[in-house]
Image (cartoon, rainbow, N blue to C red; front, side, top):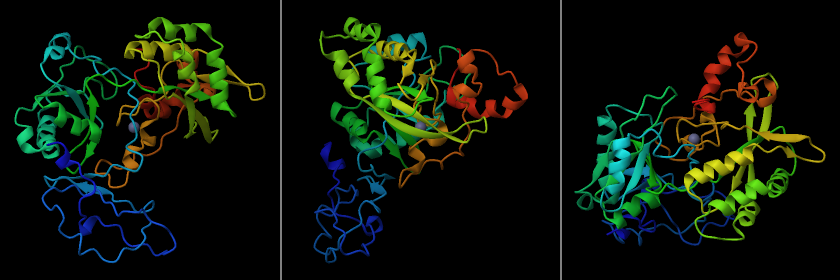
Length: 386
Ligand SMILES: [Zn+2]
């Protein structure tokens, strides 16, 4: 059954126990929770717990959790794992034959991709790792009919770590598929991978603003609201009529900042990621079209000049495949209890006002200056013009 594998209240193991706080005044959580998942030892040990001492939980959470199978994985952090903002549809560059056949597979389906995924003409090693850990997550006996279908590329793409790299999971019952999807990702010694619903969730990321300073969220909302084509796009393409859809989407806009090092010796700069937390009920294709419309807008403020968003995506993280941060800023490598690779070294970013080829559509005027940069930034900027 599903529930026996996801029981975060089960008794803890010593190796996962956070050390006692040295600050007795700091209040800990009401109930001591660890992320040990173990159905084999239902209650033993609870009586043997030492007298309860307040814990500094926010400083020392359980970093790993142990599943019933013994598989030790990165614990889900407070607030959940970061949500990768997939910049590409899952089906991108999947062979035409598979695009036709896979949707016809019976039963519930989902996707899995590994960290730093790339298309592998021979994916045997990856498949073996995934085939090894999925039963350890859902339970061996529930995974006997597990099928992992390997994607075939439609064409050879000349980009860094090109797709397709999502493997199709089938042959599991809905409940067991849900265990994977609820987990969202699994990072263990063997492999680090993401589980994705078959109907890929819409990203919430709209774009990254540069050259802007204050009140970004308000400026973004005001600018977008004023564009009748952006607003009417929502009403023309949502599946269920909803007079409030565009307004609700714009109202949900929020902004986060990211410090990047500009390549032009200007030092650290802040760029602003704009998210729409309640995206309209679009198809994925419509969502990408809609955000493209928004990225063409100038975001003018009264006092702080005009912010601009790159028309093509600014970043692509080759690790988690998000398009809202560069590879080096990936939040996953920094998770406590992480089993994947360490954080990559920070690299500089070509800003739009320091000669970015994306702004002008031309190659940089001083190639020697950009030679080094090009190697470093190509990965963030993704596939460029193809
Ligand atoms: Zn990432």
